[in-house]
Length: 127
Image 1 (cartoon, rainbow, N blue to C red):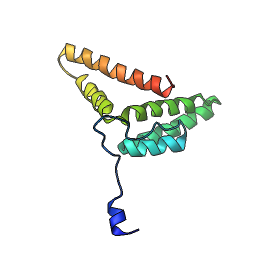
Image 2 (spheres, one colour):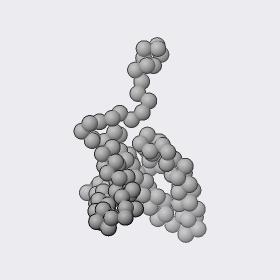
Image 3 (tube, one colour):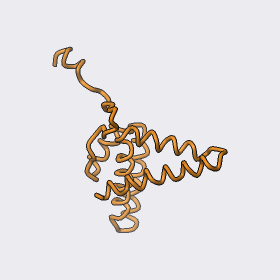
Image 4 (tube, rainbow, N blue to C red):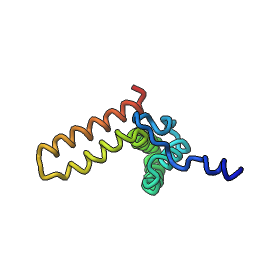
């Protein structure tokens, strides 16, 4: 690889002004979700791996795959939100506003955060 080729490589997710997704929606599989989290919210990888370990432990304790499916669903929703920069910004602003001393601001923040998360759940579920 030449220096010119190396300099042309993108090291971070591209910024999109139209708030399109910075990555395609990943499959709800461990490799795909791990790569997506590493791309859109790398600071949350330790949390991802901790929850993964807990899900597999619960699955063994309960003799059920439900905890693993719930883990995939949860992180699919996280990625669905974070892969859209504007949606992510709005959710994080709403999360901060929940601590506002103004009751109207808190109520608006709760509604905003709820709608963002419900929308992401619907999208991950395919509808």
